[in-house]
Length: 339
Ligand code: DAH
Image (spheres, helix red, strand yellow):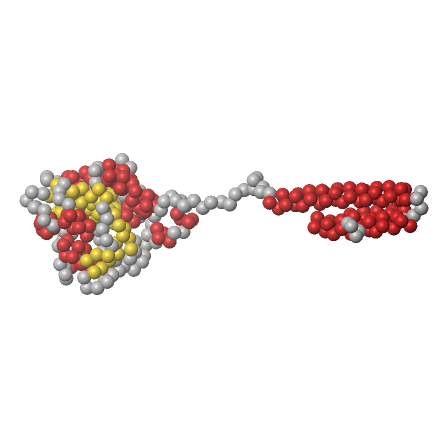
């Protein structure tokens, strides 16, 4: 019996060392230490022993049981701590690893320019107003002194929704909408998208942006127009920026002028950037036509005004020496990252 107990202990310890999962330990305990386990079955045979042998074998059996129990508990603790270690390793976060790079967007050059223009005009007490891009023929042309079949319409072919509704070709439509609603003094700018059915090339796009300006009050003159635009251009292009007003014709202004900026590359001498002109055309402007004022219910005998329309793309391209308008719309990060 002593031999049996010894061999039970050996087998138990051997098996125990092979168990790799805590869940299997309970099965082990039942088999060796349980009520129907191996040790109990030995103890049940104690009756066969002589009275002298009984306490000796009994003591040995208790010791073997205690040893196996101890080994079992030790194994359990070992396996548990090993599992804990594995779990910790799996769940651990290495805070020294570099994080995922976050893509930070940046303002588009058109937006940067627009915000600077807005800031200049807000500083002079202008309001910023917006008008609809889907516009009626009336606001886009008719009320601007461009009746149907007026030749000036030819330069602004657009996309028609129907005979009377179209995508606006110019933000000048907002002048009319504003003058109908507000009475002088009026000082507004109106930025927004405009549409023309032009083919895409380095200087044309079917969608582009304008910033319209309108001032109406008593005693407004061409000098106010020039002073306002001069200030804007100095803010945009630096204090040595120079502009000139060149006579032109727009149906809704009288007199009308185109405004040129002295070429910042050659300072008026003529170079390839300004096509040897020395000057770069920037915008259209003029004194609001008395007929337009009157149509909007403003008495041209009492009030006068100036207006202008700036191409946002054009002044942006000038500032950053961008020579192809398409670059502004392609959203190529390699291009945009430079601003
Ligand atoms: N609407 C003109 C254009 O799209 C620009 C313009 C010219 C606007 C003269 C004006 C103006 O307000 O007075 O080319």
